[in-house]
Image 1: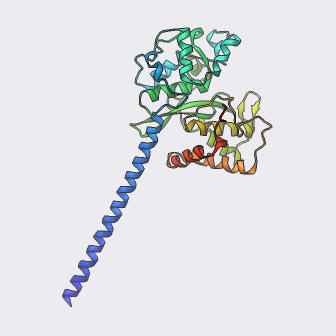
Image 2: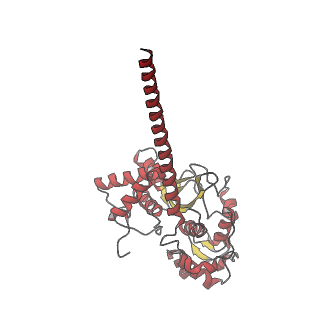
Image 3: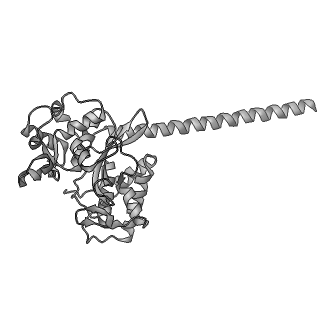
Length: 316
């Protein structure tokens, strides 16, 4: 009788040990899978895309600073925002304004060299800087970070700090802070002049939550009725159609295709854009993936690669 009880207890104990071992093994495997997924994402955003490749012009970069504030100063010292030029004492000609149509950072570097042959680490006079907009500041910084092996991505959405009570069309850059293990949002455009003019009271190199809303966040706020879509836009352009355009552009940027603010496909149009019910379903899904974050990175990539409607047309 005693031996029988001992045998049953021993069997139970062994089975318990096996179960615990399996559970621990499963937990370790799940942790390994999560860590591997994170590494895949970071590796993806370390690599340049069609807009951010600067391999052929690496000699123009000079000795880039290691810190994010120094990199922002490099961008600010080579670029002049088309809408801020007069604040820097520059009156742009119509030809100079056309520089905002340069999509690729390599093309920006060519123009920068035409204006001033020194390495980009040497700050230019405002009139000798390439003309761009917020998208160009963000993409330029993104390219520099990727060239240094730092995961980075441009984001399209809306800023709350330009016009009180409004969500203004804007682009920023995100980079992976390895020490803090998080994405940090950076407004590359905000130099000392703009910080003072706008009375900015936060760090532009680490934007507090809510200062910038990506395209997915803005779309969800508008679709839920929480915020009036007419508060989103720029100048006299506003409304859900505008938010829809930035949603798709943000989605493209997460897939390393950083289009110009006026580049359009059939899901990005003007105020007369008609959106079918099935398109709303697709757009809601995209917004959900964007807001969920890196956990659904593979789903985000799958939709982009498998659906022509969220990409630019072949003849673009």
